Length: 175
Image (cartoon, rainbow, N blue to C red; front, side):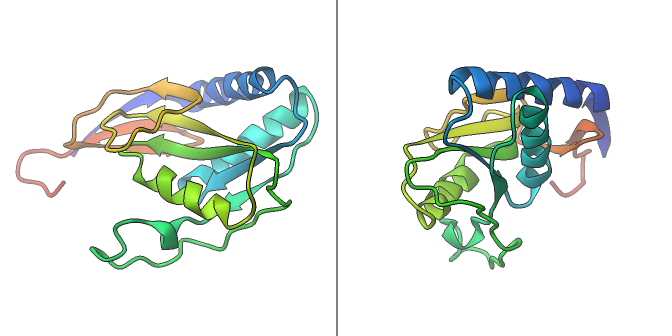
């Protein structure tokens, strides 16, 4: 497999800082803002965003949401919960910033929106992603993006605090 690093650790840190500023600016402060990371990949990013928001202005409630039981492909493939949800406050009338590492088809975000509804009726839900790959199957658009990274369907994207890597399957390899 071919691997190409497109963002390093400092790039990720700068993107998180920029996104934190954008969250504060778009919401005209932090009243009612709750940050929820989507299990699994969005949890570390939500923690990083919440930490940066806290450093810039003040702390906000932050937690995680597991959307695995709300997926629309449960009948196609076995789904097991990724982890328990940790929603620290009632979401009624909150502005939920839903966080994931990579936005691809939009199906996981749709499931997460359904899962958020189990915890209340937010006044608004905003989406923050570190990487937007394109290839949407549903009409979902992020509000905050670290990097737009057009990819082919034969590529996958690995995201961590250490950076962003595009992995391209070589001829004859399983995708």
